[in-house]
Structures are given as C-alpha cells and as structure tokens.
Image: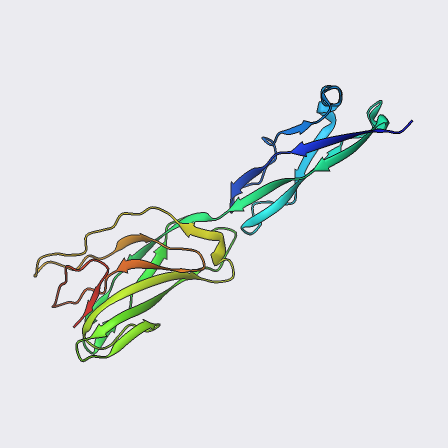
Length: 219
C-alpha cells in the first residue's frame, strides 16, 4: 500500500528591516481535510529571515514535528510560502546651509534617532544641479557650487546597507521668507535607499533670499 500524497500549501508573511521576523501568524492549508484535522498541531513553519536580513524574499518552509502516529501513511509535499523583508522608512533632516560667493557651505543632514539600525554605516550625499549667473552649468555636481546662482539639491543614501531603507512622509517645510529674516535652519525631507530623489533642500543665501520651491541660491 502506497502512502497517500498530501500537499500542504504555506502562506506568506512580512516584516520591516530591523524588526524581528516571525512566522507565528502564517497559515497553511492541506488538500486533505482528514490529514489537516489529525496533524494540525504537528506542522511546523520556519524561515531563515531575521531582524538583520537584508530587504528581499525568503522561503517559509514546513516540516512535521516528530513522528506522530499514522504520519507514515502520508507523503507530505510542502509548498513553500514567502517571507518578505521590506525597507525601513527613514527620514533625513536636511540643514540647507549656503552662503555667499567665496564662502559656501554645502548641505548637511542627519537621521532621526533610531532610524538606522543593525549598526549600518549609512550616509547621505548630495548632488547639485543648476546654472550659475555666469552661465556655468552644474549637472549633479558632488560639490556645492561656488558660483552665485540658483540650484536644485538632490540627496541620496549611500553605503552597503542603503537599500534596506526607504522614504518616510515628511513635511515640506517653509522655503520662502521675507528679506531680513533668518534663513530656515533645517527642513525635513525623506531620503530613498540606494537612489536619488528631488529633495528640495535649499542653499539659502545670507543676503539673497529666494522663494522658488526646489531651488537653492548661492550669491
């Protein structure tokens, strides 16, 4: 007498990078109701994913706990589920800085407490684009332009683990302000793991103030 073939189909689960991975809520189903009723308490599920696992998909596997009576009468085929580790939201606070011709300080940034986990060495880099008043064109320059002009600042995450992080919603901030008032000290913007985004960080000038969203002024 041959063992009866039973297929056990395992469900899916997910967690955010840096959080504990768990299969406690994962369900499974069998194509044999009698088998499912008799051996439900013996079906174990597991995944290799954990809090330090990179963003990606990992299998959820099944097994039988021990050798309960009658289990030998079944040939069990486990159809794996998928455990997905998703990117962790991160918000970067950008300090616009800026300056006047000959004395320019590039943008700076810091992460909110607890945003970066697992000891990851993740940094923020900036790219500057725009045309200076003298006609010089800056296209994703890695250094803050020295020439007076209006520029767009783009920020991105860098580092081996940057892909494990993603944007979080953040306020747009106040960019324009009347002459004679201080330039905004900082504005919160999301940063995207592994890629660039139009951050809208502003290099506000000490003397010339602009009201153009997505722009920065040096002059």
